[in-house]
Amino acid sequence: MPAPKERKWDELKGWKELAEISPGAIVPGVPTSPEYLTGDWRVERPVWDEDKCTHCLLCWVFCPEDAIMLNISEDGKVVKMIGIDYDYCKGCGICVRACPPKIHALEMAPEEV
Amino acid sequence: MAKRKTTRMALTGNEAMAFAMKQINPDVVAAYPITPATQIVELFSKYVADGEVDTEFVPVESEHSAMSACVGASAAGARVMTGTASQGLALMHEILYIASALRLPITMCVVNRTLSAPINIHCDHSDTMGSRDAGWIQIYTENVQEAYASTIVGVKTAEKANLPVMVTTDGFVLSHSMESLDVFDDQDVREFLGQRKPLYNVLDVDNPITVGPLDLQDYFFEHKRGQIEAIFEAKKHIYDAHREFAEFFGIELPVFMEPYRLDDAEYAIVVLGSSAGTGKEVIDNLRDEKGMKVGLLRLRIFRPFPYEELQQVLGKVKYLAVMDRADSLNTMGGPVATEIARALYHLSERPIIHSFVYGLGGRDVPPENFYEVIEKMQWIAAGNTPDRMVTYVGVRE
Image 1: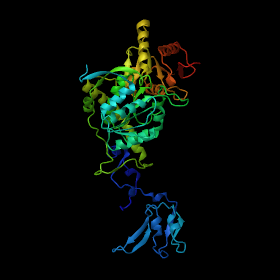
Image 2 (image 1 turned 90 degrees about the horizontal axis):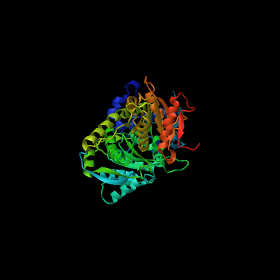
Image 3 (image 1 turned 30 degrees about the horizontal axis):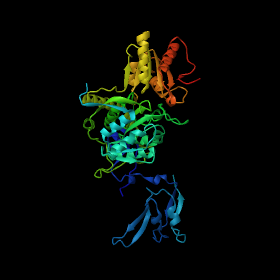
Image 4 (image 1 turned 180 degrees about the vertical axis):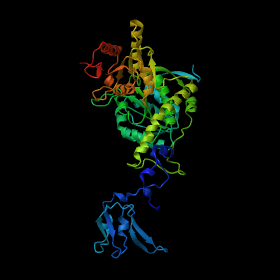
């Protein structure tokens, strides 16, 4: 996944250049969705407690945004959760519901502005 | 004198447009039938069944789907045509904006018919006037010969401007009236149009693109501004397409407008479509028998609005009657009148303008309507001020 870029207003392209490179508002090249940081939609964030986590990966299965970050061992046999990608996590809370109640390694917290 | 071979035929407006479509041989036609435009695609489907064209014909389940299929095919680089009228055009409405914003040169034959309610299948221009802000080039034709030729030059115009084009005929008045006309040879039409050169192609797997993605506060305005500029530039492409048509076929079409005995006119009428024929007859009578300085301007292309050209030909007129076959329901009359007033407003010398709405729901448009319009303008010229900005002609009080 390419490193997310921060957008600055005065660096955005003007209409004349866009008319040349993207007539009809097409977007050249694929994929372009990683450039769209949907994480700023979030009003609550899931907070992960690494010490409680059993790495069952239920949260990864249910996350609709692929925002649960994993580390896969070289032989491919050990897969561990390493965190949450807040660039794309929209704060839907599905991971918190998916996390087994007895483990409780994920919790929603208010987003700080 | 035509440079290319022509053949004299007797065809209705719908037959002539279907015949032009056969000669154009588009890659894709997606359509749904609706009175009074049904025959266009019905006849075209016969050409498909008889193997006279190579077209992929998509008989869809609604006009919304028809325009959607046209958008998809056009984004894949195909030359695409369709036809509709009235409620069908209204059902296409949201996709019309998508076709133009994606810069897809779809050519659509539209037979002008009023919009419900009350339900009525006959002519007025409220259907295409309702689409006037959809970003399509709009060509209104006066007779079957012009409808035929405009369908061909419409495709050329669309593909030069990379914008969609509507070519219209007045419902029943032209669509179902048989006229003699000169048609070109199939191979000449195909040679004239050549191959479409698309701005982009969604099927080009070596250069993948995303078409129609979400575009929010940071970029929508810039993309829309680019589309708006395409409409500004369309004027040049319209002139080029018509000049190339004249050079190739040796037959000249009026481009944005057709001025009729307008040079020294003090009174003038602006009108669209088939009614202009009746209007010209009245102008002849008033000039030749009563010596009145009257003229007429038939507006052929309403989008983009030819304000500069109109300023040149209408600035010197003293009393201008703008006849709309549609009402904007804005208490000011028809859309053509409103836009002409805007076009002429800042001229130091400009006519007094009054809006007339006529012929709604296929109401017959006899010469008396035009005499009444001129009489009303004379009444205004005598120093009277109308109560309202619009007068309704040919309706029972």
